[in-house]
Length: 197
Image 1 (cartoon, helix red, strand yellow):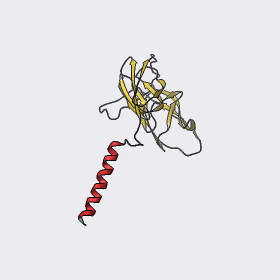
Image 2 (cartoon, helix red, strand yellow):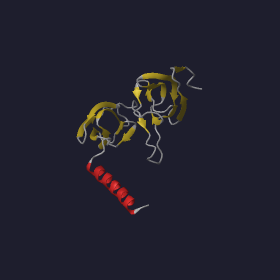
Image 3 (cartoon, one colour):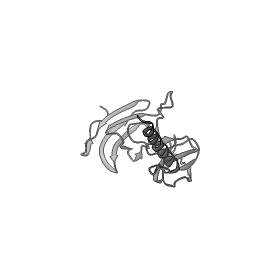
Image 4 (cartoon, helix red, strand yellow):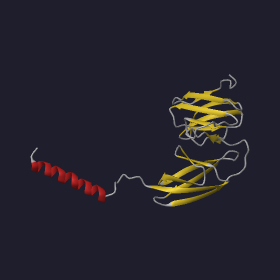
């Protein structure tokens, strides 16, 4: 390759690099932060399918409106809507109410070690990303998910975009794990099989 052609290519690359440094990318993500404090501390915050915590915790989210679900063992889950502004810190103070046996705790699978509870439910769905309700309790993370809940009989309900797509009666036993691998089709499906089977 001739020297003048190499020089022109180098000059072009250099100019592009200078422009890229001077002009921020148009597609750069705009994010803000929500500082979540709870009373008592030690709760987990779920937003956009990710767990943050334990509280107090800083949650970085894209600018816009978000729904946060805050849970702690032995306390009723709390749902809060927040508006996140670019490069700003919003503060959220939450007082948790005692509600023994009516809470859901999502397992922190990356924490290592034993993680047992009253009864454990593991749900994998095809497709993933479905919202789970146990009776009227919202599981604060979409599928696939593993969580603990008080033993008993529940209506497990799967929703997608606010529409119910699957329902099944399940019996959660204390100290035992129930594993569900569910294929959900476009049409709504009701599963009325015996929960003791």
